[in-house]
Amino acid sequence: MAPPRILLCGDVLGRLSQLFKRVNSVNKSAGPFDALFCVGQFFPDETDRLDELMDYVEGRAQIPLPTYFIGDYGVGAPKVLSVASKNSANQGFKMDGFKICDNLFWLKGSGKFTLHGLFVAYLSGRQSSSGQQFGTYGQDDIDALRAFAEEPGIVDLFLTYPLLFFTNEWPSGVTNRANESDIPAGILDSTGSDSTVAQLVAEIKPRYHIAGTKGAFYAREPYSNVDAMHVTRFLGLASVGNKDKQKFLHALSPTPSSAMSAAEISAKPPNTTLSPYTLADQADHPKESTKRAGDSLPDSQYWRYDVSNKRQKHGSGDGNKVCFKFISSGNCPRGEKCNFQHDVDAREQFLRGVCLDFIIKGKCEKGPDCNFKHSLQDEGESYTSRRPGSGNINRSKECWFCLSSPNVDSHLVISIGENFYCALAKGPLVQDHALIIPVEHLPNTLCLPEDSEIELGKYRNSLKMYYKNQGKDAVFFEWISVRSSHANLQAIPVPSSKTAALKDIFNLAAKKLGFEFVTKKFNNNSEGRKWLRTQFDKNLSCFYVELPDGSILLHVIEENEKFPAQFGREVLAGLLNMADRADWRNCTPGKEEETMLAENFKKRFQVFDPSQ
Image (cartoon, helix red, strand yellow):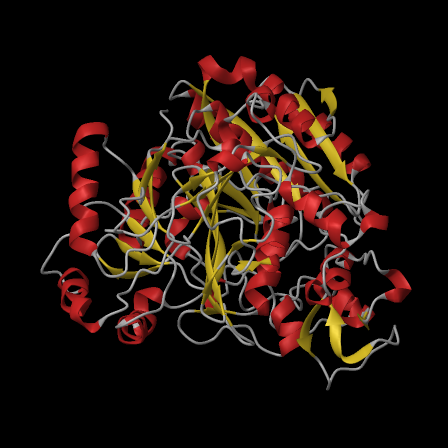
């Protein structure tokens, strides 16, 4: 699959006609391009350009390709963004953009999403205490980006154009160690730069950092990152129609990091410099120059929300704020010197699958898109302590997989047995991607009674025969987390011509993450499942994959180890050359299409269905 082709633009300032005239020209001569990202102020700074903007927003003029913007302030911004916020299609937690009109999407506050296989993160607007007003970001937005930085995987594009006191911000120190002859005039002046963005960039380590401008185009030499193999390239872009004719439109065609080999990711051009941000750290902390970037971050990284009404069990710090680091990871590098509460109660609830926002704020604003529980759990109700036979007293009404839940996608169900049912995967990687799911609300398939393995084996064998009839082989995998809610064993058909490469590609992916699989080969399914049960520890997470040749690859995940929840899917997406489908959220058709796909699957599967 060819790498996506992306256009980048600086401040639009409402000059949409001029922008899209240039985009059409470039698209015709060097395209087609897949998307346009605008990182400068998008809305006009003068009222006389408002009509031009509204022509596009109201459909009188057409936007030629999907366009995503930050810099959500200026003339007309409150009116346009308020209407978009109230649109029912934009309700919930949408990090991939609020739709304004055809081909125009607003990236609000901060977030991370996948587009054509590229991981895109962004920070937009003016800094404020809450980040709730249009055109602003708050501490929660910064905390969210820091949480994304701790997730596995590499951010391909990081978009910033925040304003602090209405001053254009580039990250402070970005020109350190750079070739001074390449730096535009006036940019060496440190005024108007921002240490918050610099700290975020040092933590996130994107492959490309694209910033709103200070009125000039600047492509910095690539620089190496602390504790990362890849380099980062910084791009600053000028505004549309600027008088100095500085470059405001730039084209990229980056291969998604998820589809690159380790050698490709670690390649360093000859003009690569050291990180400009470690130099800034050394200037501020000369005695601590050996620390990792981010170790000397301000207190804002650690506390999250006011919890003055919560009961605290540990720590003597600020009684109104909890340590976000401690709750999310169980470890705070400041230890007893931390200024904020290490709330053991909150940490325990988080480990039981309760929504972090609900724990700390008492409410969650993500709506139905939140995958976590919104009720506090007693110790006896921990997912990790459940046992077969305990009944369904712990069933969450919000569970996606409980057949009695109002949130279950019943139109995806293919077959229902006594202990298991089979359903089409939501956001399938490929056609006929299926899930085998316990009827009972249990956290994994390895904790069910052994006699239930008989029915599980029947479903597995039926899917194998069904796939084999199409010239494909079945790959089964399960991600078991200590915070798991309702188990699901995934079954993905792979063309038989590619199955010989399965073991190698899984082992290569494991090596990239720094671990090795324990591998065993078995003559039949039941022997393999018995072995998995002997290796399973309810106190630890694990991932296993069952290959067509009878091999089982198992990795037991240590308590503080980072492991991508979609690892199995991402590996198979790479094998099948469909990196853009690695995230299921990029592959969700409408309910009508899902129903049609499920009905077609059910008809073809009927002769193999063990429940018939």
